[in-house]
Image (tube, rainbow, N blue to C red; front, side, top):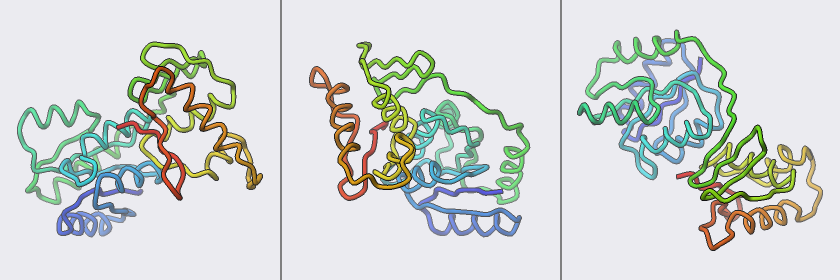
Length: 224
């Protein structure tokens, strides 16, 4: 069983990680929200333990981003934000449980085990949404701000892949493998060309760019 701990307080992070390791779990850690988002999306975890007050990307936005991209891994918020409204907000954002600091490790362990006992369900997404962009996966229909956008089949696959990984940097190699099924570099600029065409269609009417270039790394669809 694998657990990710996304917590910026080193003492709490180490305490929880060591305790879960002693229980036999494999544990990965991240110290800020953006690193945690990448960790959660790239890894295969059984439970995510997430602080709400994180640098770079707060825990609430992190969980909302994960849920909007189709991630259904159980989430336990571990936080000092203890008000009723805070708990309700956290659970409504997509968390499965909520534990307030200071806490007893025995209670945290019991809550983690309770999440692990829940039957796993497979949810087949019929649609994706990133900001004002809507993608109907069944009808192969794309709308932005309610306006229909006509895409070629390759453009649709490219957009779908970027949307499924919203908030995550995707490399040129990842796009070649998952959109074109190329497991080698064709030494052409077809990725760049398709990204440019897709941007032109998505940004019609002067709408802000949803697909950002991360210099030296790849692209990211801004879902925050």
